[in-house]
Length: 359
Image (cartoon, rainbow, N blue to C red; front, side, top):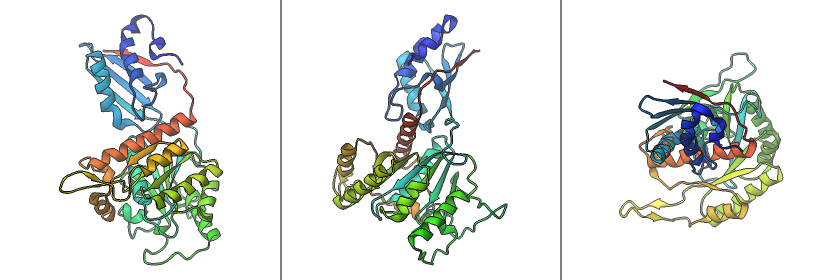
């Protein structure tokens, strides 16, 4: 791959230090720096400062401040960076570009709460995002998004309109079945209902669709994994040995159906003591790290056992949208790493022409 500076010649050579600095930036999401084809426009201001416009192929706008600081310090000159997120046009389902399954080997590990916050974090990173509640027997998305009691709507009597909350498009069996009623369905009927929700919802254009999978590795999970053209899966676990054993089964299931596991999220990872402020590993320590190393996948995040998460969830607020909450940054970083992992896994790098202007 050519270096960024080789895309320029003549008068534009004075921009080479900037381009090299962008290429040198590294983080968990930007594993190989800012690639050539992402730089769409460079403006040199009269004071010799730079203004850069990027087009990111994955949700990652939340890291622009760090990139600006890195490049500015490296060049000892002011650099401002703006970006848009534009995933490659190839779609895996209808007008949906990437589908990510969020799963767990067992219930009670905070899978649905994590799925909602991950979806919201991707949206805040610049993407168009939807979430499908595939947990037929225990749908949680209506509560988590503050949409209890919402009734489904259709414009053509064929396709359902997705619900919208917190800039997310959402669909759930919980919108079709009364919240105080039980969904008593056998596996084939439940799988059929999920297929209808997926296929008969007018999702429109989405960069990412997050699917909140049912817990476990049974018939419904297997059917969904086989019928949904998923780009990858994220496993939610806690540090407990029992949860990790079930998470291992989830990884094995996705391996069998050839869906790549993009990473693990360890929920309820630790509890911060209200008196001393030290982390207390109530359910064990480093369980997800060991499991991730065994399978060669990253740990996307360690989410604490925090009352703020529980309170926000029960009130239909999404805590990853609360910039004052420290946990918000953790969800957003996980979203960036997830999005970049999908990009690096599925696309190849190619050079494109960069537009340069001067004022």
